[in-house]
Amino acid sequence: MLSKLRDAIAAPATDAGATAQRHLDFLTKPPGSLGRLEEIAVRLAIIRTGTPRVEQPAIFVFAADHGVVAEGVSAYPQIVTAQMVENFLAGGAAINVLARQAAARVVVADFGVASPLPRSPGLVDCAVARGSANMARGPAMTAAQAIATIERGATLAEAAIDDGADLLVTGEMGIGNTTAASAITAVVTGADPAAVTGHGTGVDEDGWRRKVEVVRRALAVNRPDAGDGVDVLARVGGFEIGGLAGVILAGAAHRVPVVLDGFITAAAALVATTLAPNARHALFASHRSAEPGHAIALAHLVLEPYLDLRLRLGEGTGGALFIHVARAAAAIYNEMATFKSAGVSGPVEP
Image (cartoon, rainbow, N blue to C red; front, side, top):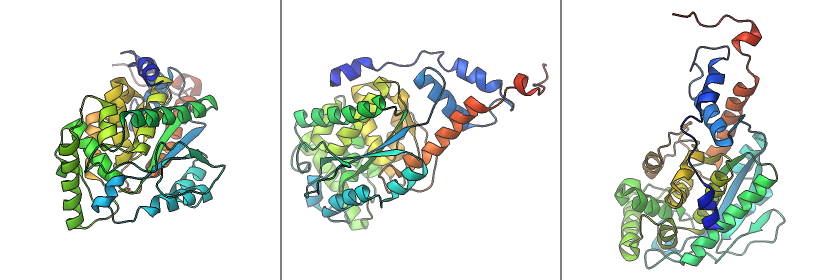
């Protein structure tokens, strides 16, 4: 499945945005006056190769635990991952509130939560193990597990697309996953671990220094191949990150736009674009995270975020807020009058 996804992902035609931009320029406004809203509309049109549409967004919240928490890299205990999954299922988390406001469907999936979870019709079981191994002492997972997580994430995305999803939003939950994201970002971008490692859930300065050292040790112990996304994921990643990489690859393969949330989802995008570089053309960076590694990851992906609200929660919250902006861009493209249809004089010819 992974090879088929990679083969289906291609760059848009070099002139793909010209028709969409020309349409926008005929609308009753000075050219470019709606700024980045026009950019979003053009990019939506390019990805879909036609009229932009944001009617049935789907938000994927993938959860997994990380063995590296044994190194003291998080301010919260590992049990919080399972507790937050139950909160998602009960509809009480921030992502649930924002998804309801955006009329978006939320897909909650267990990709490897360590603690037992109650059976629930709202929870999709995609777990390959009960949490990754401690990457500071060896690989986080096997290559086979890494591929399995990517393919399971892609399968969920394809099912949503078959049901009509026209915008895929990535979200996550996993105590310890900012450490994995920092390691992935350091490997793929070549940045120093201290530059890409932040305070995550709120560790103090001593905790931050310990976290940086853990990332350095993980890279030294595992020596991941920066040119091989599966190897990077297997050695220093996480199961939920692999699942989100699968969502990205599926969206790109089926020409459905994919919205990144914050740092963790950007790390998933680094994995995905290492496997299929042209997948980046399907990506929208919803917001700028407070995590320092996020800006470095987005620069590598050649993406500029649309919102800056100092968010650092995860779950897909920034992506959910971006749905409103994307809908506005599509509505402008589809509903705004042209100079001709409105009987408004256009710009004076020089």
